[in-house]
Image (cartoon, rainbow, N blue to C red; front, side, top):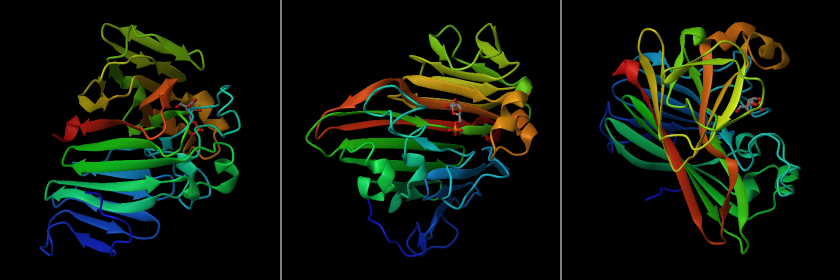
Length: 307
Ligand code: TA6
């Protein structure tokens, strides 16, 4: 059951008991905390996850100059891409800015939808009235989004539900633009994508070796028909396991040393060494959603080094 909005500032998951999972919501941010120390912070602006701590460590990369005040999409964490990925020449979305409006709209906190001391979920919602007017006019479809974030001891799950509330079908892309924090991207191996069809946005510099690839320069690639499971590891250990549901594509992005000077809010400029975007989504083709229908897709990211 979705609990509707405007919860008290602190909601104790175990009805008054102390030291269990909690959700703290204020006008800008929702924080989930487990008794065992794991936490997630979600800005209502963009419903952007800006922090995920597990095993005592931050798991997501965020730029030191990321704007967290709602003036710009957040550079880092998990921004949401909807209803278009990148710039696109389809007439229904040409006017929208890169990556659409979900990441620059203020979402509503709908409430806590499940919990136990070791697991907690919240939902956030977006409807046309919350989208900045000038963007709403550029994609004038009646829609409803429900974004669910579930925190457990070693993983976070993000799920998007898209509802067509109009009388005509519409098309959309959706993507979780996750910025993973890694100790050294030059040592990272990405397992699960070799041999797939892809579209390169730049001449991506990567080396395929057996079942994984490593990066040796800027990479910006959309893999099509990806398997459900992608692994991010390095010479020391498996760091993340990304498992998706009903999402066919995976984008891999790192701007490298030549790319970061062009991104004003990317700091430090050598921060590319400590990040890698591995983004599950549905972006190679548009999803078409009939009037009155619902689409759902999601991912579970497990931080395997904190197991
Ligand atoms: O997902 C990869 C990508 O689309 C790249 O092409 C790159 O530009 C990146 O996203 C960041 O985009 P942004 O609009 O956040 O600067």
